[in-house]
Length: 274
Image (cartoon, rainbow, N blue to C red; front, side, top):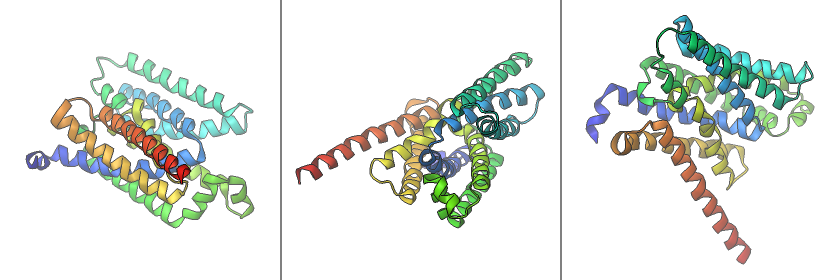
């Protein structure tokens, strides 16, 4: 085993696994508690249009995907608030438009996009040093934001009306958090891909939520479970099954959820007997 750790690509993948765990643990906790999971799904799939545009124009697809994700995030909010469209309808519209534009641009792109599977299903072994720096910077920004603004985020996540009563600028905080959610979704696409990313943002939080409703514990528990799944999926992919690590990461998260469900049921039965 020690030999594989000497390769640069594996060191990058390992670092990306841990940084992605921090990012998804923080962002996912806010998404699940705030109950905007499907908003995040709409943003994620809308970014596919940005990836298609990037490949068509010959620019970095991550940059164009980030632009599409941010545009989708604010479009959903504007459509549901200002245009009188129900939020679920706005999400579905942006989701479908992003996927349609992605297919359109990729069809118009000459040749075959060999990198497309890595964006759809992820391949953490393709993470570059530049990706690692971007993930590190984002993780640092998120950690600082959640440490310095923990109570504000907590109030907004659980009860936005109460936060307004307390004098918090809820709309501003929601826009900032939604912007960071969009950026986080795009930068973690390389790890598990568009098709599987939503699971990484919800399954660890759901598993931890079986045992506690404390926001801080959900954050730390989600980071730990995400790190275990990311590193475990990476090692299993290399040493055992030779399949994309993103698939194994999600399967491990489902395994953690199933074990957590069984354990919580067992604890509940014991407490009832007492």
